[in-house]
Image (tube, rainbow, N blue to C red; front, top):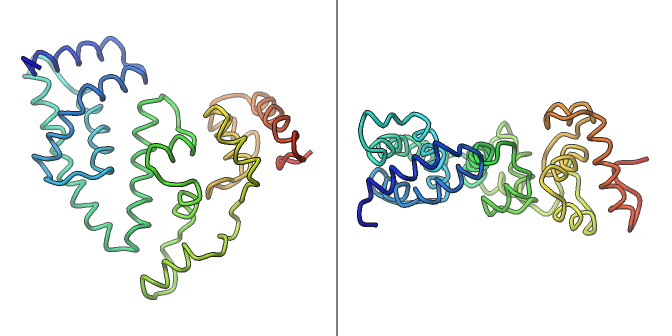
Length: 240
């Protein structure tokens, strides 16, 4: 680009007119070089978590930017100074069963980022695609309880990632998993909440409706539609 400041001002102007989830995605795509440059300048080494947090900080920076106080790129670089603190936190997190704690932290941040982009909570399938973790891995990370008896990291890892299924975890038959992955995100959420998938607690129709900001009747209708798909092979796990 011949004039980066002019280009990024244009990105900001376009985003200002379209602050929808799609507008957020377009702006972040155009601002990716700023995010990568800030990571290199402020931290040195990149990671998926730093990129994810950088995108989140960039959106915050767009919202707080005042065109009367300087160039948008400079403002975003200053906003992205927060990556230094985030990197220190990430380094500290690695000291406590390392991989599990980092994955949990990464999941939480990616979920917040996607909610900001999409205007709603992501489904677990969408989250899995973003963070490149399997749904089984996400379930195990969520169900991990740090307050366990003291022992070696090997013992803890064996407890979480051994061959036995975590108590309370709903394991879907393969056909149900295929149906789940083909559903739109809202229906995926209903299946996740209704069955307590991926380390979640199973919720009632009323609780699901409150989370998704719809009526319990809507949840019943969507469950019935999902059940019809599941019934092509066997009875629905929703019961009835």
